[in-house]
Image: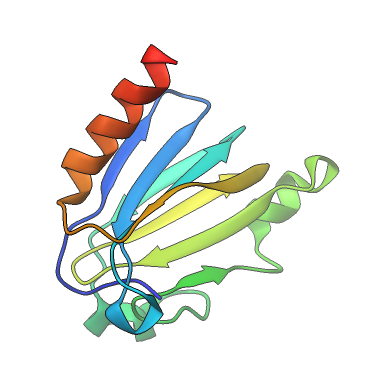
Amino acid sequence: MIGTDEVPAVFFDGDKLLLCYEVAPIAGGGLAILEFDDVLDFRVDPMNVDELSESPYPVSAWNITEICGSEKAARWAAMDARYWSLSFTDMTLTVLFDTVRLAGRSREKCLPHTALKHFIGSSLAA
């Protein structure tokens, strides 16, 4: 479950997408970093949680929803691409990708953009 206070941080290099977001206190709090590989499409939509009912597919507020049966994913069926919607307080992200993994998790209180900068810096140093 996604937290409601902090804006997520994103890094996208044209193939790989890193997303750092606040984890809801009920799910343990802190931050999580997801690493999406072979990203085919990535969009930031200003649709906030109050507008989710207008979405063309069912999505949940402050949550990650896998979108099944969409035309966008069907176009990439040979690749077994997955299509996710990630809903935050003031925006919704959609990602069409091949694989995803939990790249990092911290219970420390930190801003997502600060944590993502540190993660990227640590990855480059390794």
